[in-house]
Length: 201
Length: 201
Image 1: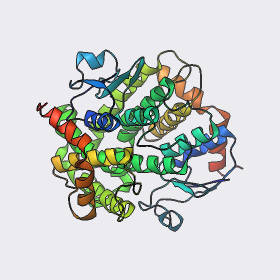
Image 2: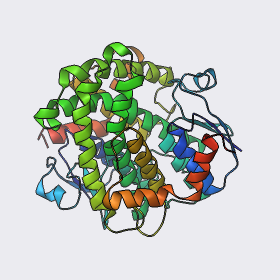
Image 3: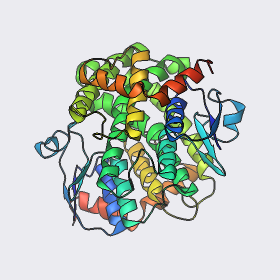
Image 4: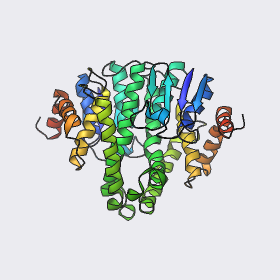
């Protein structure tokens, strides 16, 4: 039984998506950053945190990789060309796509007010996000999923970021990228996460 | 024979460090971003890029993980508690430590001039970096390396960031963190990278 700490509306959502795809048993404490339950196990106070027996994992991508490797699903063997390619895509996603979104979020409500500079950082964030979408479009081409025919962990990361982008007014809903986002975000596993988060289960 | 594309003064440096630690054979094309050699293989034009036979890898951390797994050195088996912990540390490093440094770099010379806002982002970057150093100090404690007694890939990431921090005036050279940075950055493998980059070999 895995235990996840973190509000599903944060990056905890992508871990829940993975757990649902794997059909794994888990429980969730939907807490926010710096909640005493998190502070007790994570020196940064950040969420999500995943507890797997004696193992505590502090980063959402580290969690996805750990879960994929343990269940041997939605990933590839380490050392393989496919794994290297999938990891390149995942790091592209967390660097080029997530960072502009996260920068805007941090300047909106994470940093102390006296260091925030939301309006000053927005143009660079939009520029960076636009460049990332151009690159994603090239990577995706006319494939069904980012690695080709198979849905993998990289699609969870990208699909989760697609929702974040939409929610923060960046948009990733046109053309091939938009169709791809709809395709991955309509999977039953993600629908189940959204439904549970909305308190409908 | 691995082939690395990227100026050693960029994140290519950490990949060279890994290659040296592994005693792997490699050649380097010390090119800059958007060099035709990179643009031909990477849709983002970013460096570094690592070519391993038919496999091309686009992110420095993906490279370190690929190399560690292939050589079964400086890392742990996937699915293990140690691997999960090491990955948590690596993502903490690339998120909490690297991002403020990279933000300052991007607003200094990467973004187009019309979206740069260096002075506006500096306070948040300093705040974020300071918080990350507090967390790193707690994680490190009195250990020799970040995972304990063993030097791992996570130390390469942190040691490389220590140099970047120093070079950009953030500093990571006091107390336990400073001693740790000196310890890892004095390893023969990193010294060999610096020496080669300086054109002394």
